[in-house]
Amino acid sequence: MADKSNADQKDESVVTLAHGAGGGAMRSLLDDLVVPQFAGDGESTVTEPAVGLPELDDGAVHPVGDGAIVVTTDSHVVSPRFFPGGDIGKLAVAGTVNDLAVMGATQPTALTCSLVLEEGTPTADVKRVIESMAATASEAGVQISTGDTKVMENGEVDGIVVNTTGVAYVEGGAFVTDAGLEPGDRIIVSGTMGDHGISLLSAREGFDFTGDLESDVAPVNAIVAAALEAGEVTAMKDPTRGGLANALNEMAGKADVGIELEDGAVPVNGAIASAGEVLGIDPLTVANEGKVVMAVAEADAEVVLSAIRGVTGGEEAAIVGQVTEDHAGRVVVDTGFGRRYLSEPEGEALPRIC
Ligand code: MG
Image 1 (cartoon, rainbow, N blue to C red):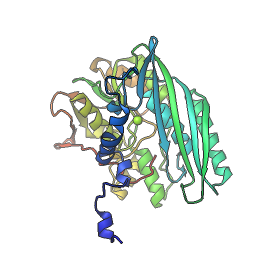
Image 2: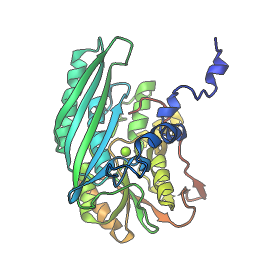
Image 3: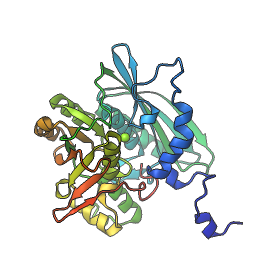
Image 4: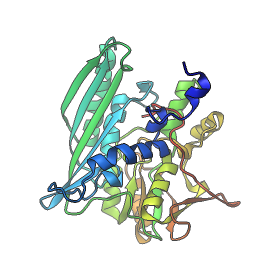
């Protein structure tokens, strides 16, 4: 029998929690096992997507007629299933609506709901999750129109797992990737960073004594629609797993540009910042579930910013940095006293955050 020291060593023959953490281990799993099998070989008669699996964007884009279908999918395993500011149902619907929105698809056509339930889970919990999903879908202007339900034996799965897929149509080439940044673009975040990750971890650790920490989980499609209407958005992402640090590093890497972030300019809720210090976690490295980060053409930055601030949930939006030719693929933080790299976290600090 393997002792603990052996068990701690890297075993590549089995899946580990790191494979789900959104960092390097997950990327190599995708690169080694998934993408080569699913992505076309260029000789297929199947129409290649405009944005497909190798791009590892928030969703895929398939040209259809004069426009394109955008599709995205996500499974949700968050623990606890009810948390300050939301629950697994709200998270599932908002997460999928947001992945469509950051592809430029702000009017979702349809959502699916696939449930995997553990035998013995209170039906009152399921009801509460479903009601929350319906309410969030309604807020986002979409209906959940197909789904599936499976039940596994007690102990085979933890309570409730929710998978949601979203589909939307965009006109012409009006989709946005996470790779279109140009030097000179301004970086805008739609609000405070770290709320979901820090509040969830605090709730789990029993740190939220004053009860004022809340997840930001919410659909952002109205915010994104206002931004797209107002000016030229060159790239977008929802800074979920790995937070703003992960999103910006991915965006910089894909576009082969640098990003200069002004440290003091990134909005962070005071209670979240304090809890982050107690937990030893930087709010810029944990998940947000109701925010968007975008690159905007310099000339349009102010008008896009004020459009976002005019939408509920976007009041604290800020310009937090700019895109540069220098230090390509890296994110540099200007702390006011000096500069440092904001490196990509290996993944979320704890599993089951979303
Ligand atoms: Mg995403």
